[in-house]
Amino acid sequence: MASHKSPTTRRYTPEFKERAVRLVMQLREELGRDHGTIQRIAEQLGCGVESLRTWVKQSDIDAGAKPGVTTADAARIRELEQENRELKRANAILKSASVFFAAELDRPQR
Image 1 (cartoon, one colour):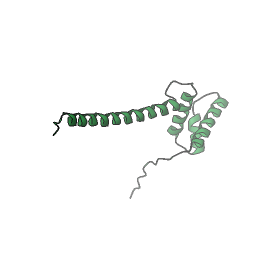
Image 2: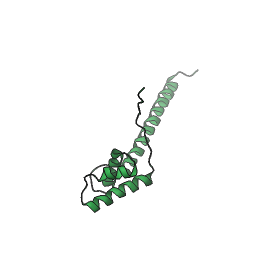
Image 3: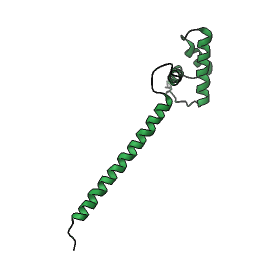
Image 4: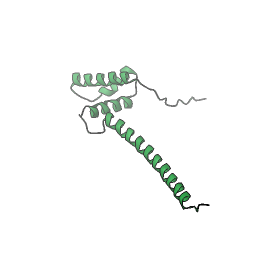
């Protein structure tokens, strides 16, 4: 019977990610090139190449070296989207209440 191994999702600490990115940056500086640095560090640390590539890319964006949405901007966007959902929900409740009370006011009094 062949065993099928499904990919697992590993969580890395922010400290681990920062260290990994720092090592990539140091190796880039030492070698004077980008090619192969991410794969080399990923193998040394035992993390996924694509995960490390994503962390390095985000670090470059946060440092202003590459265009994109910074981590701080992404967090702010998430906060604003959450606030927007809450306001829409509150607005829907208020609309329902105003319809209800308008109907009550239109009802003839005894």
